[in-house]
Image 1 (cartoon, helix red, strand yellow):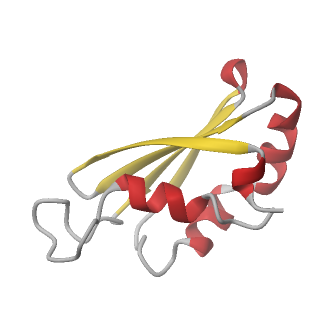
Image 2 (cartoon, rainbow, N blue to C red):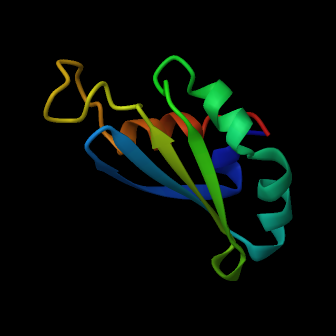
Length: 99
C-alpha cells in the first residue's frame, strides 16, 4: 500500500532545507508510520533529490512524523533553475512510498 492511503502531508521550505510532516489520518495507523517510514527509508526514497541529512522527529500526540531534509532543494527555491523545487513536490513524491 502507498503511504498516501493512511496519511497526508504538510510542508515548508527555507533555503535549501525542506520540512515534511506526515500525518496519519487515523491515530491507530501511527505505529505503522513509526515502523515503516524511517529517516533512512525517506532518504533512500528521495535520494535523487535529497543529498544531505534526513532527520525524523516523532509527534505522537498528533500521530505525525516530521522530516527535515537537508540539501534537497537544489540550493533553494530562489536559487535553483529547476521547476517546482519546493517542499510540496517532495511531499507529494514521499506519499508514493510503498509501505
